[in-house]
Length: 406
Image (cartoon, rainbow, N blue to C red; front, side, top):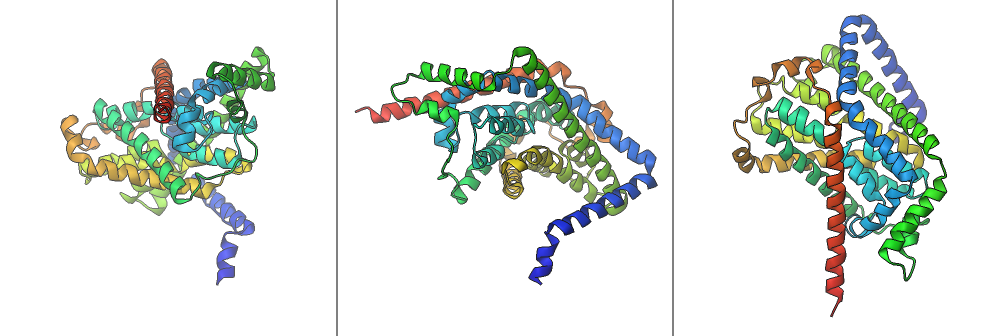
C-alpha cells in the first residue's frame, strides 16, 4: 500500500498526471472555443488593468536599488527590527516592503534578487518568502473595498486584517517549527558589515551601499535596460499564469463543478476572479462574505502561489511549508474578520452583500478601472511603509539601549 502511495508522488506519476490534465485542458478548449476565448480575455484584462501597472514600476525600481546598494544600506537600518522580531537579516526588510506595497509576487522577486546576489541563504529566503507574500493594497482598497463592497473604509479594514494575519501566520509557523534558531553558514554582506567593531551606524550604511554597488558593477544604461527587460519578462510569465487559470476556472465551472461550488473553486485558484465569483452567491450574509474575502486574500490563490514559489524552488525554497503558511494566513484572516464583525460594522455603514451594489463587475471584469493612474499613490504607500519600518527599528534600538543603561 505504501509503495502505491509513494508512486503517486514520484516523478513519473507526476508527469503522467500533468500530461493527462493537459490533454483534458485541450479537449475542454476545443469543445467550447468561444467561451474559452472570453475567459482568456477576462484574464488578460485583469492582468493588463491591475497586475501589470501594479508591479512593473516596483520590479524595475527594486532591481535598480539593489544593484546600487541602497537596499543594503536600508538593511543596516532595519537590522534591529528584522533580527529581533522575524529572525531575518535587515536586508529582508526591503522584500517585506515590496510585498506590502507591490503585492505578490513582488516580495518573492525581491527575495530572488537578494538570493542571486548572495545576501540570503536558502532558509532565510524561504522564510522571507513566507513573510513578504501580501496582496497589493490598491487591489484590496479599490477593487474589493470600493468595487465589491462599495465602501472605501471596508478596503482599509480588510487591508489591516490582511497584514496582521500574515505576520501572525509567519510568527506562528516559525515558532512551531523552531525555525528561529537557525544557523547561517554564509552570512550576508549586511551581516558582515554590522558585525564590524567600532563602526558607526552611518559608516556601516555607507559601507554596505559601497560594497554592494561594487559587487554588482553594472553601468546605469545596462542596469536600466536589464531591469526593464527582467520586469517585463516576469510579468509576461505572471500574465500567462492568470490567463491559463482563468480558462481552467471556466472549464471547471462549466463541466466539473457547476453552480455555487465553482465560485469557491475560483477563490482557491485566482484571487481576483475568486472575489468576483463570490459576488454571485446571493445566499451569503455580510459577515460570511467579508470573512470569505479575507480568507481568499490570505490564501492568495494558486495562481499567486505559483508566481511566487516557482522561481525560488531551484534556490532551495520548498513549496509545502509555503502553502501551509498561506492556509494559516487565510484562516487567521477569516477568524479575525469574523470575530471583529460587530465592531467593524459600526465603522463601515450600510454593509450589504456585494451583488446588491455591483452587478456589472460581477459579470464583466472589463469594468475594472485601471491602476495606471494610481502608481504615484502606490509609490507613496511604499515610502510610508518603509519609513514606518525604520521608525519601529529605531524604537527597538532605543528601548534596548534604555534597558541596558543603569
